[in-house]
Each structure stands twice: as structure tokens, then as C-alpha cells.
Image 1: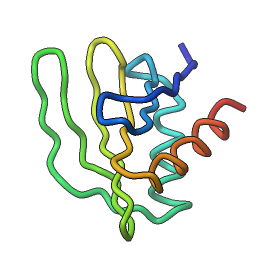
Image 2: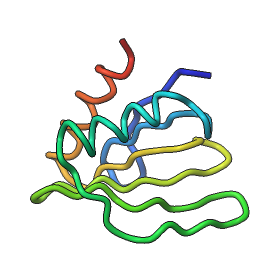
Image 3: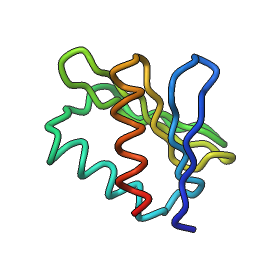
Length: 96
């Protein structure tokens, strides 16, 4: 499945759900954030039985959390208004 969905998360910020663990759009998003936009990855990867956390994407004052679960597949979660705008633009780009 190559679809993704964008919505408001419980923290009132934007989340992109990739709806699968092996969605190629996830790898494309990582590449855009790390290579093109020069975000660093900070934190540890933590795996649970049906969910996990990936290192966050950090650049200046923007932090995008990342992880996976059985319901969303891989996901990106904004923690600020700047991050919201970035994820909205990223979702548009990935949907093409």
C-alpha cells in the first residue's frame, strides 16, 4: 500500500500515517527530511510488541517525532506549528 494519510493527532498537531511498515513513501520522507532538508536524527529506537519509536527529526526549533504501530504503520508527528506546516508540505509532495 503506497497511500498515506494526514490528520490532527491527540497533541493537536499534524501527523502523517504511512499505513504500512514497508510503504516506499516512508523511505522517501526520510530521505527528504535528512538529505534535502538537513534534519538530524536524535534519540534511540525503541521497539515494543505492537508499537515502537524511531529517532526524531530535529532541525533548529522544529522537532518531528517518528515511530510505528500496528494501526498507523510508520508515522511522523509534529510537535509545533512550524512542524505542522512542514508535514503538510511533505504530505503534498509525497502524494504526487
